[in-house]
Amino acid sequence: MKAITQLMFIFTGSLAVAACSPHSDNEHHATEHEKEHQVQLANIAELFNKSSTKVAPELVSCTLSGGTKTECFSVTVTSLQTEHKTGPWCPRNISDGPEKSGIWLDKGKVYDADGQFIENLAEFYKDNEWELFNPETGEIKVTDSKEACMAAARPDVAEEYQNYCVECQPSYADENQQITYLIPAHPVPLDKAQRMNPHSGIGIAFNGVKFDAPAPVEAILGAHTLAPFDDCGGHVNTHVGYHYHAVTGCTKEVETLVDHAPAIGYAMDGFMIYSRLNAKLIEPSDLDSCRGHITDGIGYHYHANDAGKNQIIGCFQAEQGCAVESAIEGDNQSCEASGRRPPPPRRQD
Image (tube, rainbow, N blue to C red; front, side, top):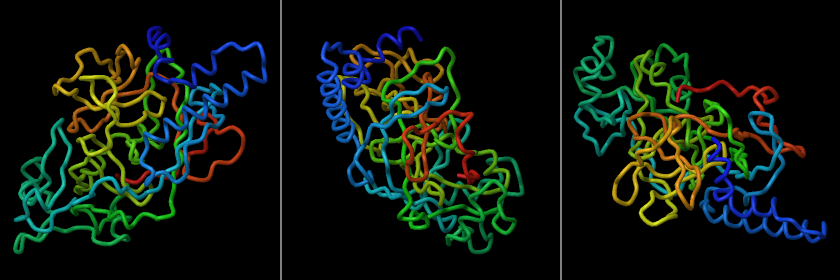
């Protein structure tokens, strides 16, 4: 991680420059530091879609997952996503094709979760308990209300919704719901890679949508349910709203270096996430276990995984910030594992 430490300042830009620039006049130094903050925050604000951000990014004091006290930029977003069309997810009949359905991620591959796929689930999973459809009419059992969604999209699926295709509409989430992401302004590298906090997830896309932790496929399948993703790799729960479990090319992209993959968002440790492939459709060959590497002119950063892997990045190489699902209060926001409030119960998707 020594190389990451050396190059991280290239990545974090003017905030790091401001923090390290010597000035003999303390007052002048403070003024210049504030100007650099404003420039950096303006640059960050340009990355995010204004329609998804509730307030402009701010710089706040924070405590990271490992206990380091530092500065984070906060981005507050709503549960609504307006950059691209969402859905469809569940087909309504086994005769429905891919255009009326979403996708399913399993065994390292992406499958069309269309009518034929649902019809053949018993064969696909070698389990005759699967039957999400009426064999006489071909009609597929779909959660078609908020109440049904909440009863099925959870670890302990209600018995009456087992053997269902689980679909939650964006309208089921509270339109006033907001989440504030605290992203380290200066990544703090770790000696050993760190697993992700499933509550905060992996990070945030530039369109304000959460990059979530891997979908709990085994738990979903254990109740003989299917919770498809749309073609953009996202679906909905009432707790988070629309969120991604895979990157398929739908989200906002920001070009950086010529021939390099575009940036698509921030990881919770402050390093950027880039698309999997570059302009020549080539994946970097030197990625570490977290799917990160160092590139001249960018420094350390991650590349999104193949969609079928159901894991956007593998781990974190720096201390994490966190997601706060309520208004920010106090002078220092703590993302420290030992001091953070326990998250609310996780829903199935």
